View 1 (cartoon, rainbow, N blue to C red):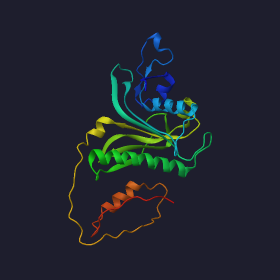
View 2 (view 1 turned 45 degrees about the horizontal axis):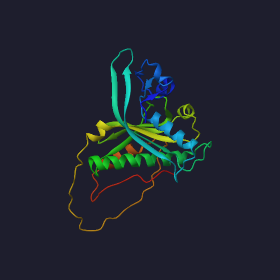
View 3 (view 1 turned 180 degrees about the vertical axis):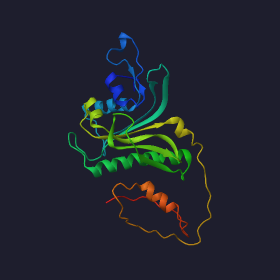
Length: 243
């Protein structure tokens, strides 16, 4: 996609503490600003596909590895990153309809699954991926559905639901989720680490536990509590879902 966007689109995706990098060239017309995130370009692609009535079962999914630009506020020091930007429709939501909470959660889990697949390929199957809720890094993200992504404790980017303001800016009436991940941080985990374990003497036994916890309880807190316990014959545990 093209690296230039409108000033309004640039401002929507501008991380706090940074400002836009623009060019003064009449040939740029209404798009004189370098994009601070390739998600802006992917939203434009999604709009083009919507106008062309291009659809796929489960919704469209787009990604791009591209540079993003900004500069420090009050300074002319440019900040440039190479990011992997990903965007996908919230499945099962018709244009113009509001998504249900469970549909948004399902879409976020699918996008997280893509991040976990990347982590496994780059860092190995035992790479620990965590998404921690945090204040949104720009106006392009929804207030209550935004988190920072870490792999083995190292920050690699952000993930969440795009805000209604961002969708309106691109004249989109379908909800989407997105992720912006640093290519440098992702590749810092390469090559993947291989592990060898002794084969078990007996077949494993799985247990499905349903825990009643407070609404604000994060899975990361539950996982940390389980991991801290010296449980005999314990192999692994994973998140299944919420009800």
